[in-house]
Picture (cartoon, rainbow, N blue to C red):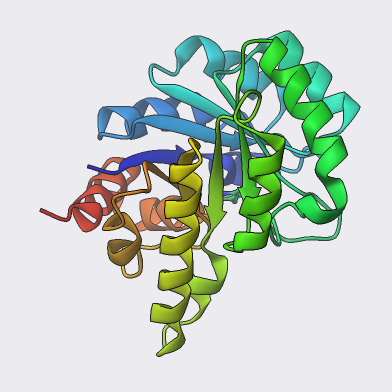
Length: 241
Ligand code: PXP
């Protein structure tokens, strides 16, 4: 069974829209875990547009499963990770103007920086994942960096989710090939971005992918049916048996 890590960033987006004390990300995380999520993901952005440092601190004490913190490989973020020591950090590219993470890390140009960041995180006892586009060339660079400091990678499903036509199966094949290559090289394989109840099935059916990271759709759906139901519906859609 593929695991589901629920990204609660947009619970914080709603809170920050009014600088209010609600909705509470800790309560959202508790509901998501009680509904069957294997863990919680948050993206601590440099601009702090949704998740705040304090959220990560409190989630560290309250999340029962894996807390995965997405962040850019900046000195500021790495220092926060070293201090707080979440179970896992996913390194992502970040630009101030983007609406959401726009693509995977480019290991052809940033390999050195990522290697250094991963080594710092691993020394602090943190599992390290990289957000990568479904591109075998990226996996080849990753294999050169090795599994000593990088424990897994998350495949960006964005292009797959945006293509509901015949191209979707091509993207799916590419994701499957990349997942298999990564798994064979010893990495943990995760996937996410843009996943919904309608498009998650074929991705969840790929046995090489351990865990999906889903946020925006779940929080949007929660507005209509509540977070507990939204998470349960997603887990049902992910079930392949
Ligand atoms: N994975 C990464 C690296 C992300 O940056 C995001 C968005 O925060 C997600 C997964 C989740 O994407 P979505 O919110 O579209 O489900």
